[in-house]
Length: 417
Image 1: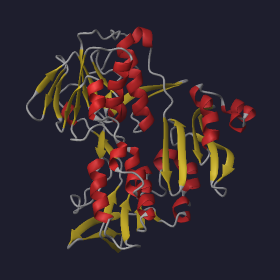
Image 2: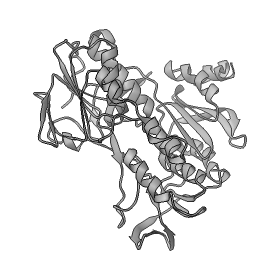
Image 3: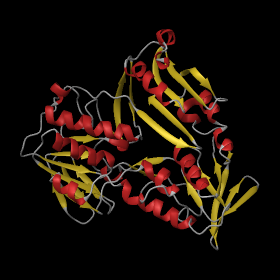
Image 4: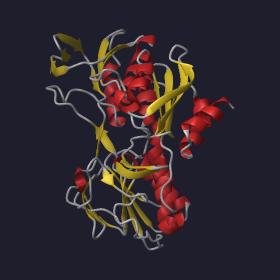
């Protein structure tokens, strides 16, 4: 089922009831935006975790390092929920959606019927088909970080721990474990970490970060199995076997769409929505679970982006569309942004370039440990990425948002202002 973009989205009325499935950043920010923009109707917020809404990025950074207590990640306390006049149902999951009646079925047998449903059910950690799958840890939510902290708190200094996956989460987990005086070994299946995200050139510029931080990174690793016996994991890599008390899997995420299997919606790699973030005239989707139409200059593509800023922006944009109506609010316009603190460095990126886009580095070098580069396709700038160059990236933002030409950008050099 796909929403016809020619069908206008009517503004919400005071007697409407919006059911939000997912109480993470996207779901809660959407609730806040609805109230801020003047919606006075009913809101139900459904979350499958027992916790109040909280922020996820600090889990693999500040919380795992011990710099923050878990409570500091909370986005909403009980008083905030009261102030928002929201009917919060936590610790219960959605099991089905009837699109025709905008009715959500819950795992405890309850059924909630609204006038609109917003899917913000997010993602979960991708599991791997190894023998010790149930014993291996991940880092996706508050319970995960609690389990990992318990697993490492009594380990002797310099104990080897294995992190499977050298992407953003894997690198951040390894960095945090290193600060706890442990000895992480990162196993990456690809030739280089982030190769399929940032492309061959940029990933090559980043390859030395792990060793510079004293963390062992092994690429092109073929892991045949991970077993667990007598409190010890054995990671089988080629002819080698790594023994360790802790294995953390950072192998990406899967959209939580199974509960929508009978809905008739297109849930291939997330919930497909149009440029108004709507799957039908009364069902929308935001955040990590949404596969949305991204318009960028001459390019148009369906994308699903698991970034904090996109989830936040989606929440604000969809609230505006539902409050004002689609003919007034217009289609969603955003510039995707993410950051990752890993191996003592900060990686930041704007836009959503393809790994196959051309890359031009405009400042710095890998040897300096800081640089800024532009992605471009057919002469149009599709993104900017930096290492420890936050000011340069901010100054380059208009190049991405305005679909600037690479030749003109190289003449103007706005990142040097």
